[in-house]
Structure formats: C-alpha cells, structure tokens
Image 1 (cartoon, helix red, strand yellow):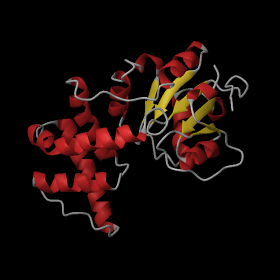
Image 2 (image 1 turned 90 degrees about the vertical axis):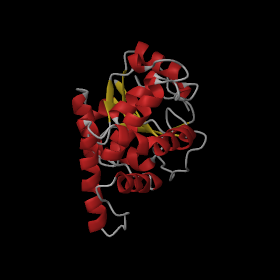
Image 3 (image 1 turned 135 degrees about the horizontal axis):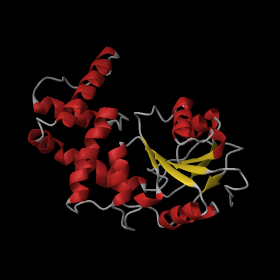
Length: 245
C-alpha cells in the first residue's frame, strides 16, 4: 500500500518512536537496562540537582497514588535505596510515568554524551524524514519518553543527527497518548487542524485516540512489534517508503 499525504490534504506527520521509528528491541534491550544499571549512582551524585529533585517529587506523588490504589508498590522512604527500588518497580511495569521518563532522559543523556549509547532507527527513517521535509511537511514526535530523551535519541542515531528534520517534540506532559485531548493540544501547538496531521504508531489505542481527535492515522507494523487488533478502515504500513512525499 502506498499513501500520499497530499491526496489526504495532510500538512504534517506526527510520529511515535518505539516500534515506529525505532526498534522496540533498542528501547527494551539497550535503553531501559542502561538506565536501570546506572540510576543508583546517578542519584547519589546528583542529590543537589533541582531538576532531579523535581523528578523525585513527581515520583513520590505517583507512589502515594499507587498506595492509595492498593497496587502494592515497595515502601518509599528517604533512603536512596528505597527510591531506587520504587524506580525499578516502575520500570518493571513499563509505567508511562512523567517523573520516571524525565529521570531516564537524564541518565541516557550521559550515555549519549560520552558515546556509550548510539540510537537505532529503522533504515527507511532518515530518507523518509528528508523526503517529507522536502515536500514541505511538518514533522513532530509524540512519545511517552521525555522531550529530552527524544531529542537525544534523534541527535545521536547511527545515521547521524536527525533533529534538523524535526520541529516539535511532545511527551506525557502534553497528556496521555490514549487521550484524544492530547492530540488536539499537539495540533494546536503546531498551529494545524487535527485533520491536517497524520499520526504513525504501532499501538492501536494511540491511533484510536488520534482518530477521535480528528487526525488521520496509520498503523506501523515493524519487526518485533506486538500484534494489534485489526481495524477495517485504518491503513497499515511496514516501512515509511509506503508514504510518498
């Protein structure tokens, strides 16, 4: 299947990351273990950082909600050890936590800066981003990872720095990815109508939310992605080559 943004009257493309531009394996087998292994030392050496303290405030608020909802999180005290245990507990559940994602972004920043980390993107992504930009399309990212983590990933890919092709980054501070209102906010921020945006993701619930907001949506079927419920009227692609300029 080949899709044409111009035929759909689309002026911008909104992209998910995990399972869309980037293999799920890179996120789960490289990024997450990297953060998990280093969070204890990072917190110990950044105890006076105001940004880290803000992340910890968010995590404590989330912990209180987990206790209230009887989710049985590990106890959270003032000790660094208990904070790390709770962070690991959230990681084990792949929680889309704003505090956790912000802290992970800071951890990954160290890895990207010192060259330990190099981000993986699917082979068709760099050329597609360039092709779409040449066609005048506006390109933005909507991911549960923090804006910092998003910018770092695209700045340090194996294909080079791709941030010059992207003009917007949105994370969970905009709202949940399964909430149509989040997509309306993004459209407003980009000064486009929802109908002028095409959202690409590997998760049907996110695509449903984009549809409800008035956006166009396309399911990405990449290697390693989880099967998604079939939707009769939603196109699916296996490569960005299927979306023309």
